[in-house]
Image 1 (cartoon, rainbow, N blue to C red):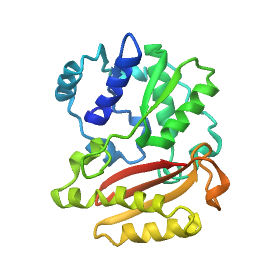
Image 2 (image 1 turned 30 degrees about the horizontal axis):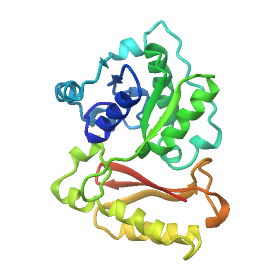
Image 3 (image 1 turned 90 degrees about the vertical axis):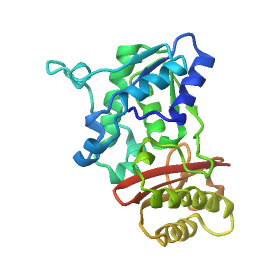
Length: 253
């Protein structure tokens, strides 16, 4: 959705290393925002984005208008059944968000007709949803998960980071530190107990308000009662610092 940073540019680099032609779309999609204020405040830095894409030798920039993506005379599918994948975490806190995401991604794929789609791990639940979308639409597009790119202090790179005040920016790395602590508690106590303690740790920081912190099966996003229920776990969180909402996660075996 623009406001490009090194996390986005790492996707360009991975695409260029693996494919013949790299296309980047920039489109702030109105149908995935459940908060009109958040849509209005979402950072838009188009000229800077273009300069960065040129610098990284991206082959094509697709910069459509809302009317191009959602023509008034076109019926665009949005009623996908993602099952449990869309219910927890982001789905529980952002009504209709994933239907909007799926709608625009399906539209972009239909227009661009790529062979591969490179997406970052930071939006992990979104990544799983898009994998299900490709399955539901019987798409041949290969979905490629790319690692989270972090600042030196561990904060996951995000377009929303630009909206943090200096004080908030100093506090924000504690989100990643808490996720690392959760990972270190593997088998020390039950996942549920660790979740509760981690949320308490986060909310003790002045200005933090945790929407959720969940330890889940990395494939199904179902909560786990014990550490041994699955081979791969992921701990996901969303934390509000004032008006700014940041998400992060860590995968672990």
